[in-house]
Amino acid sequence: MVAKKEAPLLVAEEYYQISQEMLDSFPKYRLPLPVFRYCDNVAQLQLFIAREQRMTNEQVEEVHALAKEGDLFVSREDYPIYSKHIIKQLDLILSDRNLKESEIAYICVEALNTRLKEYIEQPVKIVADKLYADTLVLTEYLIADPYRIKSFLNRLNREHSLASHSVNTMIIGLWLLFQTKKGEKAVERKELDRYALSFLMHDVGMSKVPSFILQKTMPLKPEERDKINQHALVGAKMVQKLDLGWDELVQAAFEHHERMDGSGYPRKLKGDQISKVGRLCAIADSFCAMLTKRPYAEGKDALTAGQEIAGDPRYDPRYSSIIRNALITKEIALKEPEAAA
Ligand SMILES: [Fe+2]
Ligand SMILES: [Fe+2]
Image (cartoon, rainbow, N blue to C red):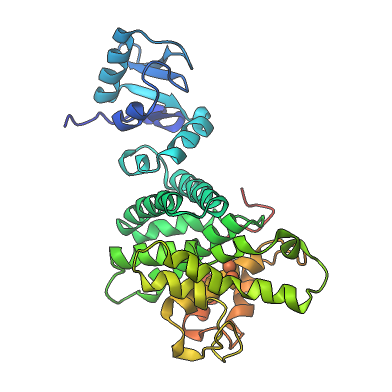
């Protein structure tokens, strides 16, 4: 493969050097955004093909040759178009060397949100497979450098929806998982795959709870509370149908409302009867729920939520203290709701 030129420094601030893989993913004759070429003689970028302009065969060839040489660019101003495009084909983040970590985090979060919404609307294996495929893109990206999870912490969504809550839980859950392995053998790829999908799908059973119950601001009737509590079992059955044979997937769905003192549901498990993924998911799930504005409560700031969970003996203290300590020492900083993008 031909080594690409480095983008000139000033250019790199305002433009992306477009990769061949990215170009290949666009419609062949009409590009969804304007592209610019770098002209050595004047040392600047010039518009080469306008957005949606019908290209000739010669122009198509020329555009590909320029991309191969590293002389083709798109403006960072067109980032919304660019990112929307990548969301549909997430594996492009793995080959695109021009995106910043914060941009990749945004794209991954949007992609997983979209895939989860699709699965919640249509919970069948073929739709789950797309969610699974994008989860593997994320884990491939993270395993190369676990510190990358930090840029996801700023992407927590403070508006509640089942999909955004699930993605938030995955972000906090994976960050916690990496922390639990500090100083030990690093997280393995297979383990990361399993945990990521398990966190993402922990609440899929909620999609079967009637929305009028979820919207209620009044105290729930016992039969309504029962319907909600059943989501753990319903979700476990849903993920079992995916036939991945991963214990963690079922455990996260079934056990994320179990509590260390046996006060949780549905089986009132205690302490180490609850799996590691179940205990981590319980913490990530509750922490994320506390940050988010709900029909019955305002969102809390991260430190308050972290301290509340760390002080609550129903959560495994080995893990709940990790979040609180990282917030106190400012090892991590979560954007508060008004500042969140
Ligand atoms: Fe739940
Ligand atoms: Fe949840």
